Length: 336
Image (cartoon, rainbow, N blue to C red; front, side, top):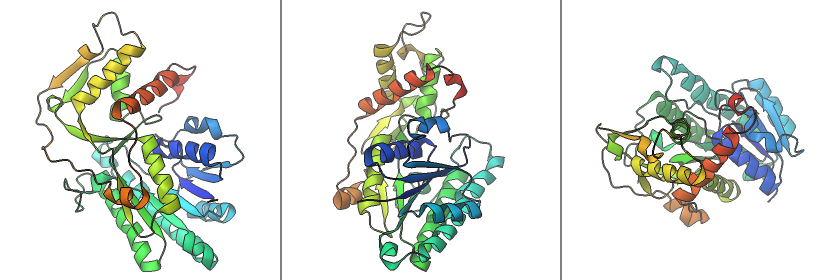
């Protein structure tokens, strides 16, 4: 199926992995608007920057004139909305950034998308899709009721409701994707895995809170991209799909796996016996234990998707990418 895509936030982590896959594997046109904030890096898309199928637009989705003109020029069949403020370690006084970028930004994008969609011929209206990437942080532990606990999660929940409202109020064909923790190449350095990797390479202590018993689900970015591609092609408008890695892992187990992979690839500082010796357990109350249940049933039954990448394989791929790019010339100038 031939499609022209318009992507927001395509220079960020998940967005850049998606853009590379779409251009290199699908070989179909894609326009990407990105404001190049702290996590959006042009270097993430160096491989396709000269590809005639790829167009980069430097700008913010709150610039409605720019968005409207870009939609008119590139005439997309589908919009994939990755752009978001997600730096959750920011001080609470910066929470307005979540409001401006995640809520107001999504509203402005929806308004311009609606105007563009309403002007399409009826046949194209029927096949058009607006796909929004959200997070599982909008939910309670049972993942069935909205109960955001941070300003970031609250902003994403608000955007969820806006996307859903435009579907019901105006008929705009929208789809929302909720995901667990996504990891892999090109992730911004503040996130857990690249942060731990950087500390290990520097010979710094690897603090593991909750005595390492905290549990999280991990989804490799390549599997997430595969899910998004399936939803673009075959997802049902008005629906919400959940994607996760299908299995929880303790933070201690994750870090030990990373250390084992590093031992096989590079030499550690002579002053330490092993990367594993850097692990430091901190006695803190672990996350409340719960019975983890994957929520992939819907996308598995409707679209046949399931995560294919085991954690050790995904971590090895991720570590290989960072080792290559952090050791490259001028790597210090690039903040992934």
